[in-house]
Length: 124
Image 1 (cartoon, rainbow, N blue to C red):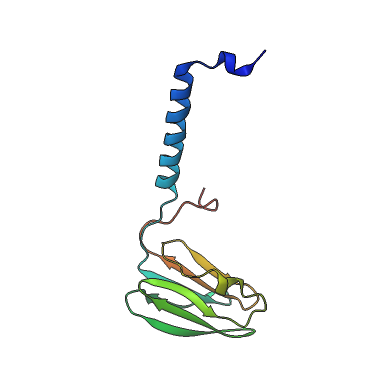
Image 2 (image 1 turned 60 degrees about the vertical axis):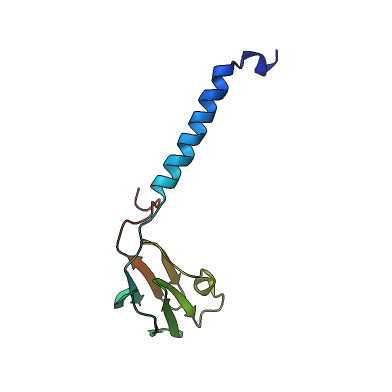
C-alpha cells in the first residue's frame, strides 16, 4: 500500500506550519544580543576586560608566546597566536554576546559579553 494514499490536503498545511514554526523558534532562540565588552583570559585567569567601543590591539602573554587580540568596529578576534594549528585565529571576528575564541595550547581566550547570550548547549 502506498503511503501517500493516506496523506490528506490538510496534512500538508500542518507540515508547512510546523516547519515555519520551527524556523521561527530557531532564529528566536539562537539570536544573540550585541556585545559591549571583551573578556580576555590568559592561563584561565582574567587578563583584561575591554570595551568594544574603541579600536585597539592587545598583547596577551601565554606559555607558548604572545597572542594578539584585535578589536575593531565593535568586534573582537585573535589576530595572531603562536599555536601550531591556528584554530583560534581562523575563527575570525566575534560579534555577539557569548561568542568565544580559545587558543588551547597557548591558554588564551576572548569572550564577548553584554546583551543576551546566544543559545548554547552549555546553557541548556
